Amino acid sequence: MNLSSLNFFRKSPKETQQFAVVGLGRFGRAVCATLHNLGYQVLGTDIDERRVAQALTDQIIDHAVQLDSTEPAALREAGIFEFDTVIIAIGNYLQESIITTLNVKESGVSHVVAKASSEVHGKLLKRVGADQVVYPESEAGCALARALTKPSILDRFDLDPTYSIVEIMVPEEFHGRTIAEIGLRMRYGLNLLAVGEHEKFEINPEPNKRLNKGLVMVVIGSNKDIDRLPI
Image 1 (cartoon, helix red, strand yellow):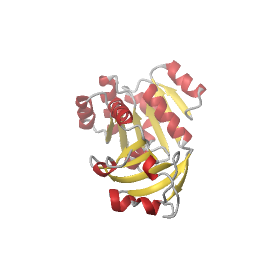
Image 2 (spheres, one colour):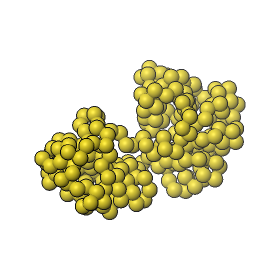
Image 3 (cartoon, helix red, strand yellow):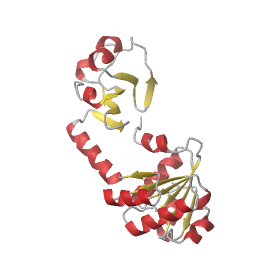
Image 4 (tube, helix red, strand yellow):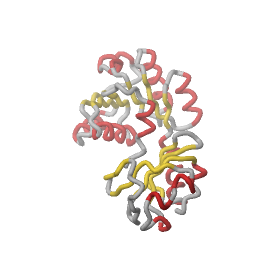
C-alpha cells in the first residue's frame, strides 16, 4: 500500500484528471511516471530536448514538449494554461522555478504545485502564487531517518504534525493473536485500517482475524501512540 502519494492527491482538486509537469529531472520523471501509472493524462515539458525524448521513449508520459518555461508565450502555445493542475518540478533552478510559477499562476491555472530546494525558496514560491510547495529532498531525509530508527514502519503519511497513518509489519508480540485480542484501540489509542501482504489488503478487517508475522498493518492515530507500539 503506497501512502506517499496521499499528500499530493489530498490537496489536488478532486475532479482533475489531467496534469502538466514542467521539468523532467528525477523528481519530475517520478511524478510523471506515478500519475501515468495511476491512469491520469500527463503532459511533460523540459528545456532539454533529450529529457523530453527520453520521457516519451520510457513511456512515463502521454505527451511531451520541449520549451523554455520562463517564456509565457511558449507555455500558452503548449496549452499549459488549460490544465487545472500544473507541477513545477524545476526546484534546483531558483530563478527559473519562480518565474515559471508566476507565469503559470498569473495565467489562471487554478492549482500550482512547486518544488522547493529550501525554506526561503518555498516562501518565494508562495509569494508568487504557488498553492502547494513540496520539499522532496527534506521529506526523503526524514523518511530515511525514520526507516533507520523504526525499520518496522514500512511507510508513513503525516496527516498533520500530531497524527499519521503508518504501514507496519505485524510485531512479534501480536503474532498468532486476533485483532480483538491485541486491543489496539483500547491499549494504544490507535485504529486499524487494513491488514494484508504483497499489496493485497483487507480493509476494515473483522475482529476475529488472526495476525501473523509477515503480514502488514495500516494504522491511524497520534504519533505519540504509534511510538508506543512494540516495534
